[in-house]
Length: 265
Image (cartoon, rainbow, N blue to C red):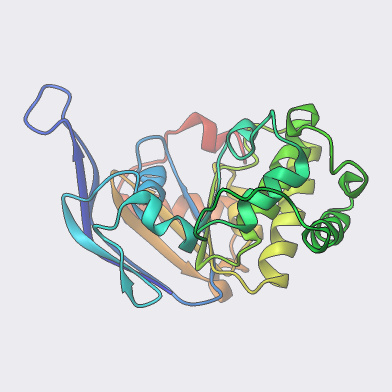
């Protein structure tokens, strides 16, 4: 589903603040894979997601999504192929629009725009049923503004919006990091359900090593712009957090020193 080859990216090249964030990275993701990605600050995790989404162009390398070379495709041109949920719950929805209007916009992503506006009864019923599956009571609040929802509710709504059109790949950029532990667990459970029910291919960045081991069928660990570990499901199920730390040290020759990741133990 996703084939990345020799991807490199350096910000501010030739200056005192030069920062090589990706160093000749190659990654192949099969259809239906749910890949968790972990690593310290500056490892290159979010940069990979941004480059898949088209936010930044690569310095070199290629990105092929479902057989289509999207390396140089503008961000808006590839938006209908990609679903994305950000760390900040406020980024995925429009606060001043109703829940039903947010869903309608997401449902029409990639379609030709016209002057006609409105949500049909058929669409409303579909949205109501989809919201009911979230089990958050949002199916009775279709006309409420999204800004009235809690962070967890908005993130759940964003997840639904990102998956409505069954994107080629779903990108989750630490999408539970801003939530309290109970709400984060609820949103992660919804994430697994949505990915499974829609047979989606997903790439999820997390700072939590327990979550990285618990969720998905594959785990990737990054350091200094490179993939240093790529662990399949069979191996992942046998690992503890301490095992993962030891593997990281063996692969890099150094201890993981990122406090945010280590505190998640």
